[in-house]
Length: 373
Image 1 (cartoon, helix red, strand yellow):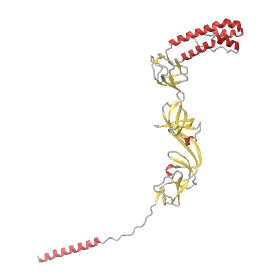
Image 2 (cartoon, one colour; image 1 turned 180 degrees about the vertical axis):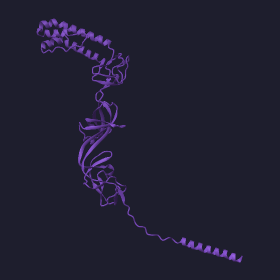
Image 3 (cartoon, helix red, strand yellow; image 1 turned 90 degrees about the vertical axis):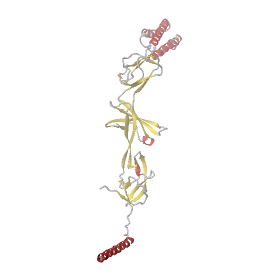
Image 4 (cartoon, helix red, strand yellow; image 1 turned 30 degrees about the horizontal axis):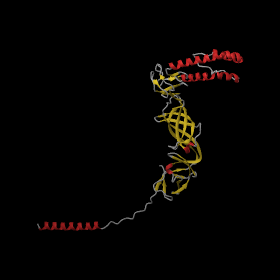
């Protein structure tokens, strides 16, 4: 019994001693090893300069519109005649074919009456012509025989004799002729014919509709020949010229491209957008009015220059080059820029220029050029 108690007491003392030694060891701070200093060097991306002739490409968008586009309006009043459904969007017409007819019964009756009056007026002067101007009688007799109620009036014979001219004026020949001619012009406005081969793209009236002067009737175009109105900044527009080749494309149709040419350049800047408008002429059977197209034109080349991302510019006129792993600020000439790139000069072939400026960059900063593995 006494032997067991001595063992227990001895074990307890040993545990206490070990615990105290452990606490002392933990209380002593560990000896710190000195850290090696590591330099903070930024990794940068560069491009090797190689000066060459750089082409400027102008990219813009616009809506296609037919070059020959006729908006039809009525100049007279009447009821639209029946046309068997011809005056409908999508119908094609040959040059000279009737597009739309407006009933003109009253107008035609007035025209016939005026023609009869004019014929009577000419007939009444024939005896005096034979007696006093016999040299001119045969000419006017032939003209009289050619008059008809059913066809437009012919131009009056040319008169060089001043006495004969005074005689005709006194008899009201010229005033009667011009009144009749004006009536025929007005009557022609009741019937609108196609000025060229084309197609109706819009119609606003139907047979039986009462048409009034100034009313919109529809739109008639000649397909296959179009113009794209688009624009660019004034600085870029100065490098464009008439006849330049333009590549046209449409989103969603990557395999479809059309080739056009610059047809017109507006010599003024839009006050609202500060852009310069130009027009591209293009032909194609698969083109349609209203298509939204993208135009890409190669403008003039800039010799002895280098193209760089705009993100590499510093204050628009400087860039960083890497010399002996150190950044050096260098002035350049900003020759041209667009939304993404800039064309510059002032750098030497072989120089390493930053393609993107890192945060907090400064001249003299130590850098490491990124190398692809």
